[in-house]
Length: 404
Image (cartoon, rainbow, N blue to C red; front, side, top):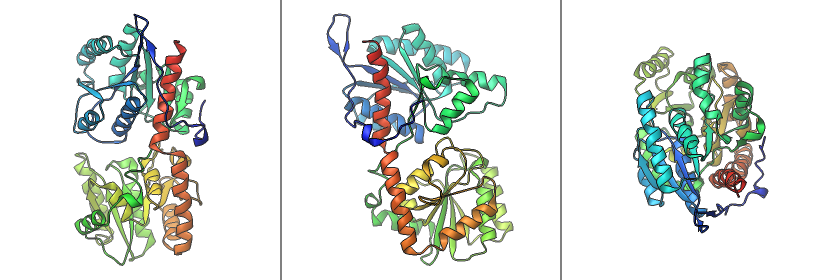
């Protein structure tokens, strides 16, 4: 399978080849991406980034979703958006979506349909088959596959003419669980937008504003665990590790929306209270300015007890020159070079995390700078938004040129 991330082979000005229409004239190729909704998140941002790249690559770009505030970003970039209830898992709605998607495909001469989630993928795949169009999927996670029924539902993501995996870990999972030949899989890691996630792009005013909002002390090292409040993200492991640390010169922030999981949030707050660490650990909720949050931080943690498909937090933290500590499984083993650009600890092991935190907290400024400099270089070389978009357009080109 194609896992080469070497930037020396990347053409950042990839163009989509022209296609002959029925009259023999050249026309722009059209790619339609289908995603549940455009509210927030890495999948959604990746959709928008690729949609823009299609336009820049002299193609026509269409996105279908159930809508959301990020639609405006598409329209500003010259991308067409169609609002359909493709986020629905209702069988009747999914069936109706097939007809709606076929109409869009036929009206706009769509050449490639790219699905990024399971529910819309079922409708998109059917539309692709009925119109004889290329079908591409992006595997963004392992999904639940503990029983036959779940595996059958997930199977739709393996039906692409090309299957994009967001990490080598996910590529291996696709092969192991679903038996998909490596020749169909293309590994394209998620990319960081360095116009947002670079230290010189985050103003002092933004940092001060957020520091005041969170009432951060000036005399403590700041540790954060970003990510939605769900159990497998390992918040309880971090709380236990901070307790074991026994230090008063740190401030730990748990940053992320509870997404209506109020019981879990209260459970974490009770754990903090029971340990008497209300002054050391705060659950601060959703943050609208994550680049500023990282820049206020000394150490960024990912304590996930289950493997991350990619591990966006580790990449963003390194891009902004922060020390990072992840867990030794999943995508983090690819984005963090243990002991060189950050550290990897044993999953679900608070003592392993405590030990590594002590190492990171006790670094000299020179030692810290050496690690963060290498980390930033590593991320810029292998995990840029431009590389992600270029490689995705190369997948489209494979299919288009295969028809030529």
